[in-house]
Image (cartoon, rainbow, N blue to C red; front, side, top):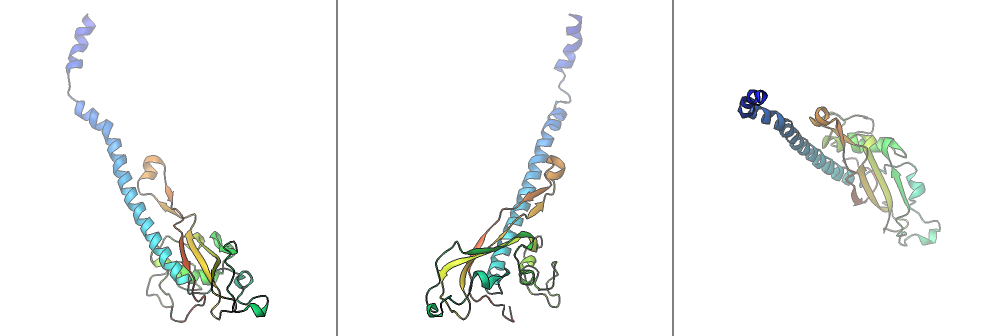
Length: 212
């Protein structure tokens, strides 16, 4: 009975309730605030990546092939010269990929698409002498090691075409991560891996022009 009378004032005292509620809800509010920021930043990176790939695919479609041994996999002339002028095979299984970390890639041709110069291995500011507008100027986080380009037969064009074969080309990013701003400290999520964002386009003349 004495104990009941002793603790009764404490049970009825509501001072500090607001502070307690604030301490409980503050981490939740902070986490939601961080999630909104991270979502907006991730959407920005997503948009930049898509725009960069669209531009890069268009540039690659009219540039030197980005894969080594291109002529071996996609010859211009038919095995039988009498077949020149006939349609090329519509066989999408005939394909070859320049993959991440430059596997099967023509480094010079890939550097030109990604960095704006065949000799560069990092992104230089626009306006730098010898640097053309390139993929990294749209999204500087994209490196050559993130790019995968696949060429495959499209069934278009014909054997002996002077401008080379007409192929379907797919450009995408792989193993590309964007750092988080706040979630690393709150949840231990330091990086978010972006999806591939494949862009498919039909090639035209796979020759780098002097003014591109």
